[in-house]
Length: 423
Image (cartoon, rainbow, N blue to C red; front, side, top):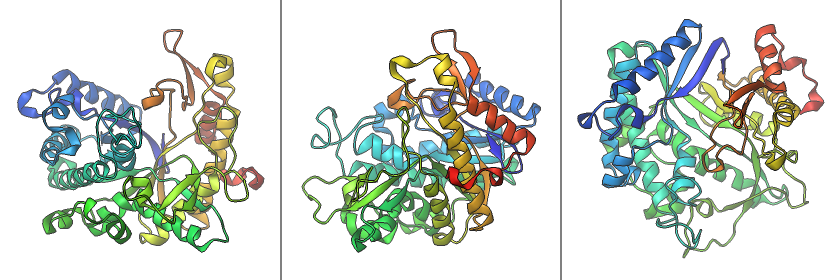
């Protein structure tokens, strides 16, 4: 929604909308290509800078059917072809790119616990999973995601009309607090949890290999990069994209079960909503999808600055989801004062990270402009600044949060004006 120095809009290009059958040789949808030209042109005509995501989890079905999508290293070549086409087609207009959206979620939720498409996991995780191998496939998928990213990064840098472009990955970490502040093992688990969740893809694109703790714990289940792949991955991001929503307590696991490997267990933690003293992480209104913990936002940003040598950071998503059940209505949905407070608290936390902690944050986007399809939650969880009436021809209604954010952007209302006790 907003870069810190100009109006901007984040959008995604659907791979299958450009290449309906996965590869260029099997046909390009000119209607799909033109759709994105029209959208980008309309943004530019209105003085809005497009930030474009290349892959937002929409692997073409044809490639899933042919070789299993990101389970196969064959996807790397096909992804580069798709990325090259997109860069050449839109690179003269678009200068800000995200190769992958939330690779940790895509791999973990899709291939380790089966909550998101394609819904793969082991039966000891969920008996409803039709297929999969938890503790293995997520690492394989991420390996192919990272190599695909590196190929796309190289392709962008070779694109002549793309000169001056920036590209990164939109990571989606939570912040972790120790489950027991007096327990040294719980304290140490925080860094380990962040290495597994964020360092998995962030550190690898900076240093060219996985975090040492991942290689130590996961062992032979973690694929290895060739020397050439490491060289391509090293420094293959111009900025760090962050999607932040919430935080959780990290509880150290002393004795994992090696017979039932899982990504979360590999990080030797369990996630807890309450700490050892039965205190919840942040606050969580009745209709909130996730706990609200703005302190975690600031702490996460400072952690990235301190651990990764103060990189440029763009907040690609930050938002508050609500579910109303049978009480859902225009009147209820537009009176979203909790979302307004969420934005105020997180804008203040970001303000403090920038001005006090000296974190190099250069952009901020709210998730999202409109209520939309939220993966396995469908249309039940509302994240928008505008309420969409799904019972009345998708009519849009401005929410209280939308009114606040519009005022914040247009009249210069600053986070420093917000009372500190709102944190």
